[in-house]
Image (tube, one colour):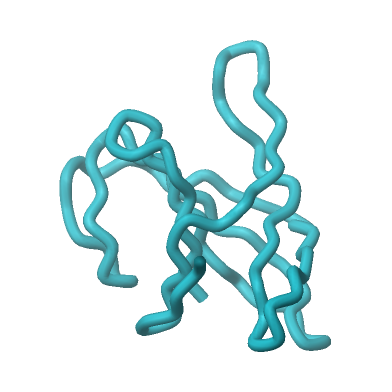
Length: 99
């Protein structure tokens, strides 16, 4: 189940492409709406955020140096917005979304 707290969605589904160097390219993610239906969002553009060590981000998410952070442009409710995807393969192998 997904929960929303301070515009953070935990444990979301992400479709990504893995490049030959092992880095990920996020392509789509999906969220469950109030009616329990899944909505899929395509990522128009993305930019990897440089790693800055272990810290708490401006979104309130604790990250380590192994956490991948992507700033992505998506269309949500008819408006293009910037969101951040967080992926922690060494900590819990889950994706988080900050809107």
